[in-house]
Image (cartoon, rainbow, N blue to C red; front, top):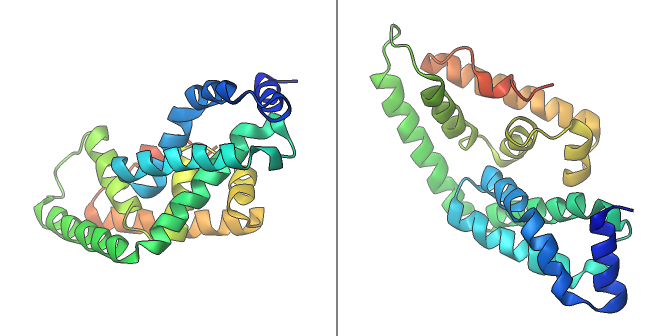
Amino acid sequence: MNDDATIVRRIVEKDDSSAYGDLVEKYSNLVFGTCLGILGNREDAADIAQEAFVKAYRILSDLRSPEKFSLWLRRIAIGLSKNLIRSNSRRSNHLRKLADRESDAAESAVEPSLVLSAREQDGIVRRHIFSLPERYRTVIVLKYLEGLRNADIASFLDLSERTVKTIAFEAKRLLLARLKKEGVLGVSILRARSA
């Protein structure tokens, strides 16, 4: 039995709510990082991460496999992040327009002979990731930035593994086309975690 399962059982069976702090401490960076990757905004990510921990605590007794607490918690965080995106479509549209304006400005400023540093390339890649439609963006973030396997992504998003592979392929193709148009080649961020 892993530590998470022991802590979860202690909370549920013995009503030891103080033990939940151990789980929050252990997974706060993971949950925040997942939310940040999907939302692209530190403030929203912090709010949703906190909401994920509160929701998980409220429904902890519903968790069937306490040893899978971290996956279950991450799934809650992903769901809440996606809900925020959907409920705040005006803000999302504003962010897409901002990303498009930045992209247009960058395209006019980039000369073909200019060699970008890896850090600059990663910044451009991230900007383009956040300009993708939500479905593509979520899969790209979970697969390439968070390093999750297709099976885990499928489980989190209630999709088949084949659908996740298709979305990842289409999203990567679209992203690479946009990046090529901007003159960014050899994108390490999409290779390093594609295994």
